[in-house]
Image 1 (spheres, rainbow, N blue to C red):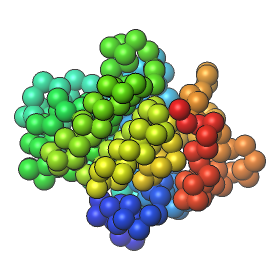
Image 2 (image 1 turned 90 degrees about the horizontal axis):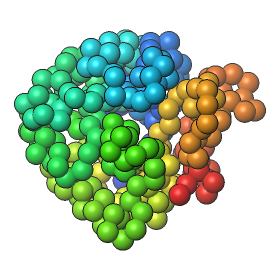
Image 3 (image 1 turned 90 degrees about the vertical axis):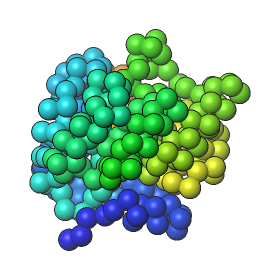
Image 4 (image 1 turned 60 degrees about the vertical axis):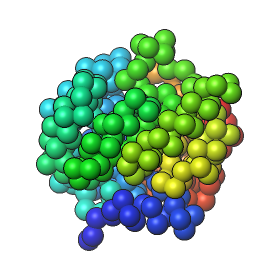
Length: 264
């Protein structure tokens, strides 16, 4: 089985076929999600919360990310693999980012994801020029939770919305091949998607994005505590975990997820 590439995801965007992505952290789930038809698996630093029990993603290390990336890479055969750059692994300099990205790519990632706006355009440019595909992440960026004062919707208001639009355009120009938009108004996400040529992946960003992503443990209603507005429990009514994953893929493809109640 041939693994999907960023070009394949770009073609889905151009053909109007929604991209279905979930987070994944181990080989067993990776194999199951492959079989369910996921286009992409994100080895997210969300593992710090759903696997390690931390309150935020901040304690996750590069070694943690490399370990789980290797697990997912061994378990999957088809899905495009993206790995998060954890907090502290890329903010210092583009050279630092390259060293961390190289470790994740060696573990099996096809692309690395980093959080932040135009201030990281030089880093994106540096990585892209050296053969490291980059996924940008705008809106609610969990590594900045303390700066935001909590997990709050971003991009509200004309000035904030324009900045996010400008940041997205600058990151694309710097070489980003994909962009995650988290917890922003659906109207703003639609504007970003229309303006860019690369796929946008929404999480709490409305149905007009090129695709959707959720944290696996949220989608399966495993993670305890209050769920974000953009989460839907796909285990409800499903006969198995595999069935829930297949339902998620179908709902993303046909545009029934996210619905209005999952958007801002």
